Amino acid sequence: MIKKSLRLVFASFVIIGGTAVVNFAQGGEHHKPKSINERQEQQRERIRDGVQDGDIGKRELGRLAREQGQIRRQERVFRSDGDFTRGERARVQRNLNQANRHIRRASRN
Image 1 (cartoon, helix red, strand yellow):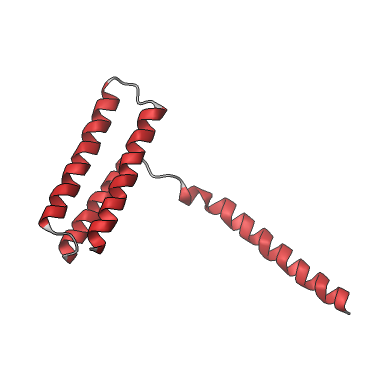
Image 2: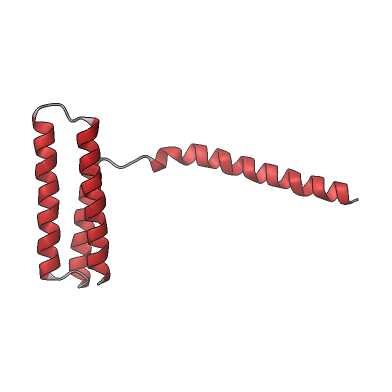
């Protein structure tokens, strides 16, 4: 009796786990990394929303806008020679990560 119950429970976990794996595999296309341009647009929207909500003040807005401009200029320089290397892309992504943290902090103050 106990063995049957354990088998039933184990079989349930296998079925549920298998379903989760299939769903995750199919949903992978929706979780692709965002491009640099998509991330920049998302950050601009977050800044805009923060200003409209009153979470981001004038000084913070100036600082965040300057930072966004620096990232755009850096990307433009990296792309200007026609060869946007993996290292350059990683550097821009790191700067976007840092900008993301700055936006989050500014909107939570």
